[in-house]
Image (cartoon, rainbow, N blue to C red; front, side):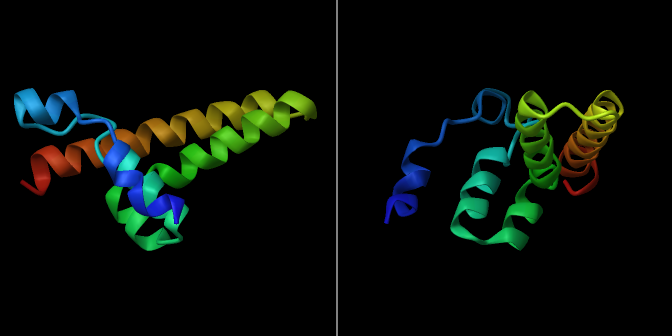
Length: 98
């Protein structure tokens, strides 16, 4: 299956390699791979913002073709929720769980 060899093509994290610390995106590639394999809980554990990021991308694609009345408000809410999740994941991985 195509997804089995997906890990062979993942980019190595610059921060992890040279500074031995997680970056804001650490785990996103592995979470996407878990998501594509159908391992949804593992994807969330790896990178909790995976679902809000997917929702944001889906909304942007939808909004490109169909304009909605509250599209700007929805975009702001999705961006803020993504920022909060990404920052909280970063702080948890680097400072609380270590």
